[in-house]
Every structure is written in C-alpha cells, then in structure tokens.
Length: 300
Image (cartoon, rainbow, N blue to C red):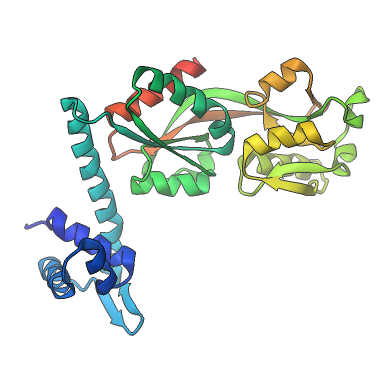
C-alpha cells in the first residue's frame, strides 16, 4: 500500500482550511494548476473523491471528511516529532500548548508556567482558556498537548485519557459585608431569591449549582452576571453584594484574609476531581512533560 506523502496531506489540509484551490494556492505559494494536480493525484492514490465542486467552492465528501480528521492529527504529530528532535539536539527550547479551564487559567497554570520558565527561560508556552466542551476537541485534534480541567466521567471521549491530580472543594461565597453572612444558617429557599453570579453554561460549577437546587425541588437561581473569566468573578465578588460558587483554591487568599466568606449552607460544598486530559494516541514532548511535572509538584 502506498501512503500519501506529508506534502500531499499538507496541500489537502490547505485546500480544506482555505475553502478553495485559489486561496490555498496563494497560501502555499504555488500555482493553482499545480495544486489542483496534487489533489487529483491524491484522489487517484486513495481511489476516492475527496471534494465536491460547486459554484461556492469545494465541499468535503464523506471520504474527504475522514481524511481531514486523520490528516490534521498526522501533520500535528509529525511537527511535534520534528520539534522534539530539535529539543533533544538542543537547537530549539521547545513549545508547549496547554489548555485550562477558567479556574485553573487564573490560578494554577500561571504558577506552574512561572516555575518552569525560571528553569527554562527560552521555552515558548501557549495557553488557551476555555471550557471542556471546547478544550476536548482541541486535544483530540492535537492543537493542545494537554488540558487542565475538572474531570467529568459523563463526557469522556474514548480517545481521551485522563489523570486525576487532586480533589478540590467548591463553595458558595460572598464578600464579608453581604447581609447573608450575618446569619448563622442559610437555606436554599433564601438563596434562590438573592442575586447570583455564575459561570456560563456548560461549566460544571454552574451545572452543580442548578442540580443542587433542582434536587431540593426548587428552581435554580437566576444569574444576573455570567462570566467566563474566573479572575473577573473573584474581583467582582469583592465589589458587590452577590453570591457565587467558586473553588476554594481560587479564592484561598481572600478567604484567609476574611474579605470573602463561605455562606453557611450545609449542602453548599462540592468536591470535584481536578486533572489533565490528553490524547491517548499522541505523545508528549519533553517541554510538555516538564510543564505537567511542575503542575503535579504544585498539587502534591
């Protein structure tokens, strides 16, 4: 069996990503007829039609869609292999692509990156913040070496590996001057009518708050503020009388200083698993392994 070359795959990916032969040819700096010939030779090699031509451009066939998903991973892994060889030779410091949920991007990841750069100052690090529904596809495509997230067994892809690093508690909190803090005990009924700030769906923290109220036969509270940035949520809590549900690790300094206080609600604690997700069929570069080692050290 003759396999497509890396050049053929890169040309195919360029056509898909640019939507037409003309635009792809400009990006690749080759003539459109030459690119068209390369795509035709690839189709002949695979004995399938990869594109449907239409007035708007090109659409992938079922065969083309399958090749696209695999070719993207193959080319990413090939680039990683070349980069790793350069790292081992000492001609390149390395480049890590890491994803992080909002909570971890605001706390744990900056500390791990700082520790790693203190030892390897020439290393390049790209951090992408997002929720698991965005990060998991990026890990699968090979866009990320790994991602630090709240582990959720219900949404695991069979091609995704998981490693639990620690457990973390999330609690209902408010600033010290919030009227609710003066009460010795608080019920869910009281909290349902108070202003809340919650992460945008489908964040697991948001889902847990809603489940907590629904399980008690009550409507979930309405969030007057929704956020993606955990750093914003932490700052907003200090500025306004509003409730939120945040991991203690994110607000440890504020809790220790008394600026933020846990709301006295017996059912308002959730222990979550924190860990990394990675592609089972992929490999980690030395630089990625080094960053993961720093994360483990901080959590140990």
